[in-house]
Image 1 (cartoon, rainbow, N blue to C red):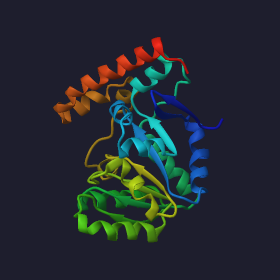
Image 2 (image 1 turned 90 degrees about the vertical axis):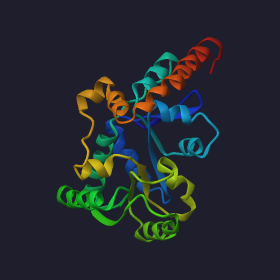
Image 3 (image 1 turned 180 degrees about the vertical axis):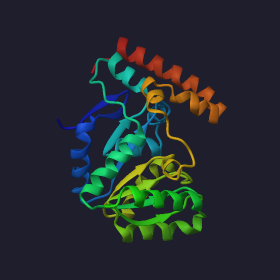
Image 4 (image 1 turned 90 degrees about the horizontal axis):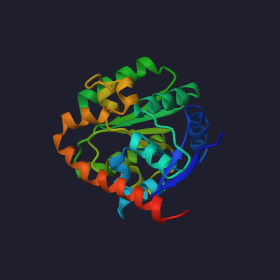
Length: 246
């Protein structure tokens, strides 16, 4: 079954099962132009409703994968097709496996030098058929960006992982899309940290239950104040249900 896109409060969300993922990735590889896979949490979703560059990047992304249960709840509440929720780590590994089976290439962008070196080493040991054609650390100086863009463009990788230490994060590739001719771009902040074994991935059972937010709050207590935009999200769902029709 082909990937279906729904509109939820003005934000595109894709209904993509694990079985559909391979077909979609192969489609993007044949696209002949840069493409973007985006993961969105409920906080990203709220930000994507605004008028900003991030929102524009989500509207133009080739695959928008929901991470938060709240997004699935919203779709069900508004009687729309309920999308599949995926752990970003599982999707990332699945995409790498798809690329490896076809001897495709990969570029790592982000993280600090030691973490990036360890991540590359572990990648080479695990995905032996995958061609790692380059890497570049995050937290770089603005004056270095031109060289980074040129390096990625010349390498023409099948997949570019954008990880921690990139200022524009999820929409870095979108804002520079005219500088690249091909390749899938995927922003996953924790990827280099997990691959280097510097940080632990979210426990699958914790993710399945939707409890990963508590870990984020422990790392950054200020995220508690995101409860207010979340309440606004609930109000918007109720308002749309009562007063708007598709």
